[in-house]
Image (cartoon, rainbow, N blue to C red):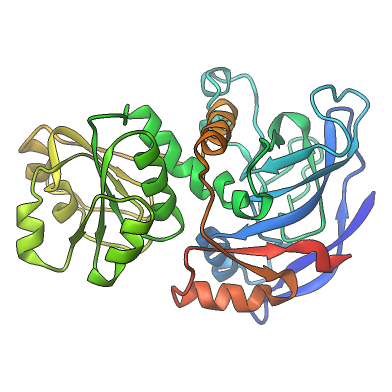
Length: 347
């Protein structure tokens, strides 16, 4: 058994405390990653909210991180010591079901092993996440970090980035496409950057007109203020694809009405139940879809695309000792647009 330092939830206080964590000894196809930077995701907030410390399952959040290979297992051939790598929210899958064979491990029929709060497929232990100085992961799920990508600003690509990349790619967004991005947060700002780089005419859909400056800076061609009835009416049927990254419950009807005939609303931000009026789909043969994370091929393609187009997250970098502050500020919607933790203070 290996040990490292990290930040673990205290179920009694809903705060994270520094502690020593156990990591498994390397299996033949494992690499040990020295984590340098880890993004702070809304999923981490949800996990902490639901964790009361009584179920006997420890919680160490963090599932979008970059670092360097520190050690390799005996059967590892693709990565070597010192290689820069990136790890996302999936660290294993069955490898045998139709989804895994199609390179969509994120939809594994046996359910993928999550980077934290998951169950190891070999020993049944609870996976502990990237708010730590070291992580042990199967070589297949550690992605080489392309040259030119800043490792701190690239960390959020492994969750927020691939979550918006998959639907943009699957829906064929490219030159001539009209894309609306609802919500300009951790996911939304990356969706704007990617849609623009794919050649789409891209607009931000936001409650606040104050986002106009940021939207332009990110490359967007326009802003639709969702609280302005006239602006929403003028944008009816305006987009081939709407990427909905809004993280709180909301009515999908107004956003479906922005979708053009045969277009798609991809609902990504809020993962709870939704109610849809059939007429909002019927009028214009509109489609409602979703996506989550990405398989290994899509993640690798996304990283290459971002490196080729200079796409990284807009981040505020904080020492990991300020993790509770980062989480509190994320709860207050103060991230512009992703907090990233520098894990070097865990040495």
